[in-house]
Length: 304
Image (cartoon, rainbow, N blue to C red; front, side):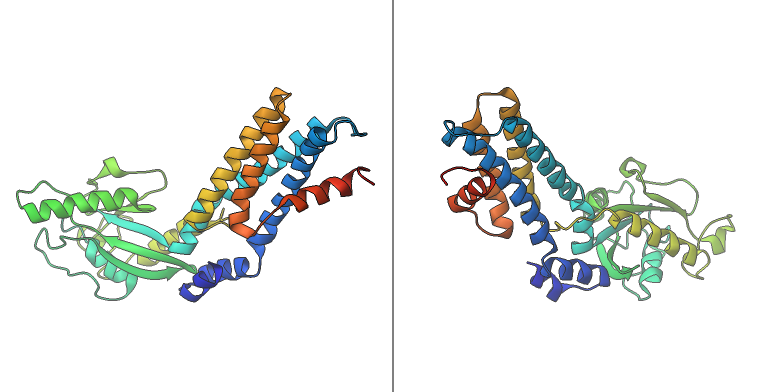
């Protein structure tokens, strides 16, 4: 996976993430989790299988500690998944607004190429147009969407529906207006930007002009800061497959914790720890009974 990501990397941030995982960062991180869980299952199975031997007291507390630390470590990577995903697959930024507020002109100006058709005719943009570039080393895809308005044209109406759907699913939205009245505000989410356009025509303070470049540098700086914030918490897990495995692993750990706290359910504790280990196996490798026995025999004076 890491090698595939490295081959497909388009930006410096993508390359760094891929190189980190290819060099074993995720393997080492999950390997540490694996050892912690091996310790927990060894303590549990020692209590089950060698109850007539001299087993140290307080094993339940030690198991609880090991499981708690494992849960924290898993939760940290799960929490950083969304930011890591944005690095791996890119950040989508939708340009939203009424017809003829300058959405296509702005996309062309940001990308530095005539990607989108620009005319004075409302409804020119019917489908979502994508334009990709690197901002601050991060891959960003700008979405030039159809102007939001009521229309009897079935094709344009479909374009508006698609625009709303893509804008809602995007990582960030820029709401554009040349009047100060922003269309599509029902799509607004925390962190989205509102931008006044056509400053060369309106003379409004703070308005940008994608045509002349007025205020464009400031908008680019704002976007760079946004992109940086949206990837600052990135963990090592960037693929949906890995994320799903870790979600299953943390669920198993939590169930093991509950069984351990309930008392007298050591077999269930061991079962759920094994379930967690199985999930981790699919990320970094294999574990078998010899690993567990090795941990048991290295920790206690049993069978010697």
